[in-house]
Image (cartoon, rainbow, N blue to C red):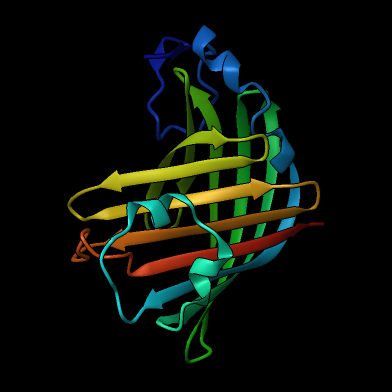
Length: 197
């Protein structure tokens, strides 16, 4: 457990950066490409005809997954994210989301969070108005981070592949939620594309 000012730093604590340990050094500046202000659209699709789960498909995500005729767009979110690195291992984020449902009704939400390296692991912690979301991460190549969570009661299993280039930030992912059969392909699929402002 990391310590700062004599108090243990839990994973969901976003108030201050955890103590840096030697195992963290492999991830120095891993979040740096995100620094700045980003705007774009995040889309949520629901699969109307789920087939058998394919591990190969679920690990090798491409935009082609979203072109299947069984996917129906269920929600779009206008997103503005501002990232600020405070150190090579700790980055704050403020997120403004505007949700539009299939009836054209909108709702707004403001969240704050951090990307951090703690005890040799990558973490993304976002405090939304209605929940705290924690994803554990790892890198895939130079520009991509894979974020995952697997929770039970209620079930929340998510996988996001985020690729950050100089001016474009792209996300593709999927999710299983309470009542979804894990033997089938995911019910929900996600795609986001943001541009640096």
